[in-house]
Amino acid sequence: MMYRPGRIFLSVPHMGGHERNYVQKALEDNWVTTAGPNIPGFEHDICQHTNSRHAVVVNSGTAAIHLALRVLGIQPGDEVLCSTFTFVATANPILYMGAHPVFVDSESETWNMSPEALQQAIEDRLRLGKKPACILLVHLYGMPAKMKELLEIAEHYGIPVIEDAAEALGSRYGGHQLGTFGRIGVFSFNGNKIITTSGGGALITNDEDLAKQAGFLAAQAKDPAPYYQHSQMGYNYRMSNISAGIGRGQIEVLEQRVKQRREIFRMYQEHFRHTEGISLLAEPKACFSNRWLTTILIDPATGKTPEDLRLGLEAQNIEVRPLWKPMHLQPLFAGAPYYGNGTSDSLFATGLCLPSSSSLTEEEQAKVAGTILKLMQS
Ligand SMILES: *Cc1c(COP(=O)(O)O)cnc(C)c1O
Image 1 (cartoon, protein in one colour):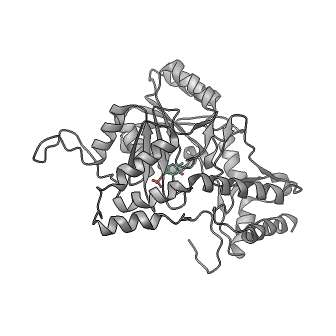
Image 2: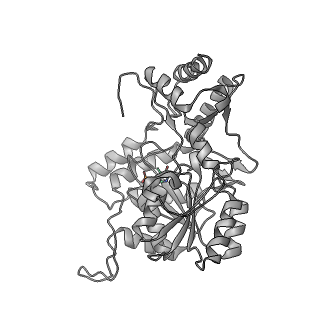
Image 3: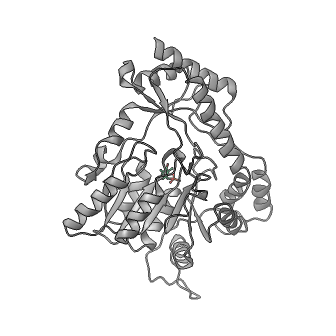
């Protein structure tokens, strides 16, 4: 990442103030390790916030997805239905398991997994003699996927759902927090997410056995014995007590961060209200997005591409990014099955993520919007 003073970034950490109290206490009490009171404390906070029974904090969102697949019993050679329009961290854990991703396209209202494409994928895999072991779906940029339709299909075929809500902490669908609809939900606290622990993640579930097993595997799978005995392969995925302390401070201001990001979205909408060729993603009925990142689509009829805008904004020391490049277009996943009609391909070709930090000032946002408007008219 190019850094020049005064740069406007896509999404930066935004402390609430109380983080330092939790961290300072951890230092004073010498809980500078992967045990300590902030860990169950932060897990409790996450349960409270999401209205979920169990939470397990770990050292990344990717680790949480890996554990979710492990505890659901995904086997080498299994097929996992996965949103194609996402960050690679969703799909990589499928490979860690020796399983095979089957990519499912987006629909255009939420940009998330298309129920039609999901149904088609399941039917086709069944026809080929292989029942998919799991559905790993994503709530991209904070926007809830069409959970009612997706869950109906999952239940009809008896396939468990994992929600990758890494970008969607604080978003709701039908009034319920995302992450609580599937067997397991996953969050990320990476530095660019809506709240951060510097790096970290969590999984939530209402199933006590799944939570226990995930916590066990995240801590090297130590059998209950006075010596080190292991019957299963575990991982060192634990979160540190220092990171969990930052998380406890951050979750206190989560609702405020959601309000701020939604306000940033609203302001961009105002700025671009009269601009032909720029559109923003509306919130469909039942959806409440945390608006982690504000994204725009640029109509190709304007003759402008996202790359034109990116270069012009970069010249003004403003960071923007293309939308995620779909997994079925990645060299890493060449040859993996894909079901869809090209919706995510065209989103990738025409979309851009704008600076959306909750700490973005009105002046900074006006500079971003003003630069885009100039570039559109040039
Ligand atoms: C950030 C992110 C992850 C991974 O989280 P990390 O904490 O960075 O490992 C997974 N899925 C999506 C959609 C993400 O945006």
